[in-house]
Length: 146
Image 1 (spheres, rainbow, N blue to C red):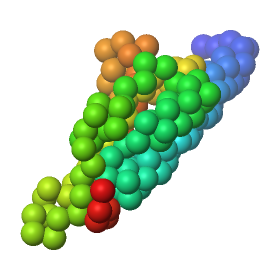
Image 2 (cartoon, rainbow, N blue to C red):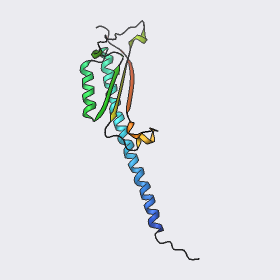
Image 3 (cartoon, rainbow, N blue to C red):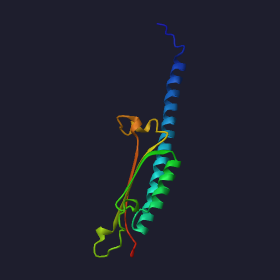
Image 4 (tube, rainbow, N blue to C red):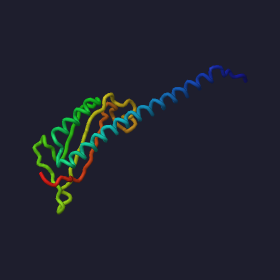
């Protein structure tokens, strides 16, 4: 029995080359997504530290956060905090008698643009276009006087 193996090497090369390109593209997409996640997390930590010292998230800090996220191509920005100056909330002051009353929370939810290509499918999103970042943190307030 004589077999014709012409084209077998080319087919095998194309299969492995496509798999290699897919893997490289996935790694780059994952890296870019993690870089964006780190960027939002850094902004959250910075503003949480500012709120920890001020006793609330000030209007200036909130506007600065929104402008930084907007300039980095994030949309649908939602910022919630347990004490925000823009909501008219009073400052949270340091209370040594009740430590649980000292806590301030900050949550940032935003949508990256451009959206990650493969990452949404890898994390189990039913619609890859519904990718958003949701960063949340809390800290103990250090402000003593109003």
